[in-house]
Each structure stands twice: as structure tokens, then as C-alpha cells.
Figure 1 (cartoon, rainbow, N blue to C red):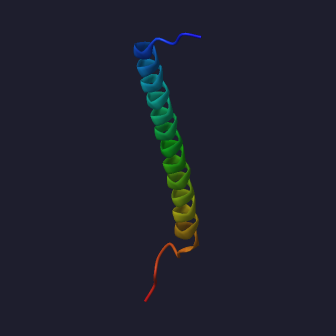
Figure 2: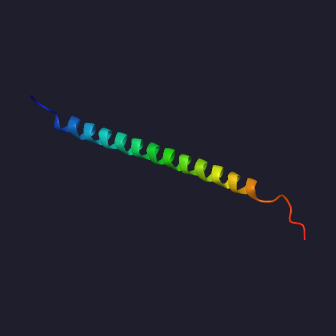
Figure 3: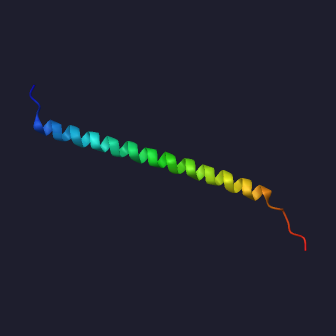
Length: 55
């Protein structure tokens, strides 16, 4: 089976670009999940603090 070397180069580049884009999307999803968890933890911590300190 004949494979065009130029086509293989483009196919390889497209596969690498696709992998990079998937990795980037995964990293963005992970950061969004971490940010949401930190926001939730911060809101929970703030809700436990007294509204005012009377001295």
C-alpha cells in the first residue's frame, strides 16, 4: 500500500494538534473544577465566621 509522505506529515501534524487541543481543554476543565471547589470552600468558610465582633 502506497502512502504519500507529504500526506503522512500533514496527518501527523493534525493528530499532534488535536492531541494538544484535547490536552488544553482538559487542563481548562481541571482549572475550572479546582476554581469552583475553592470558591465553594471559601464561601463555606465565610459562612462560618461571625457577622460582627462585639468588644
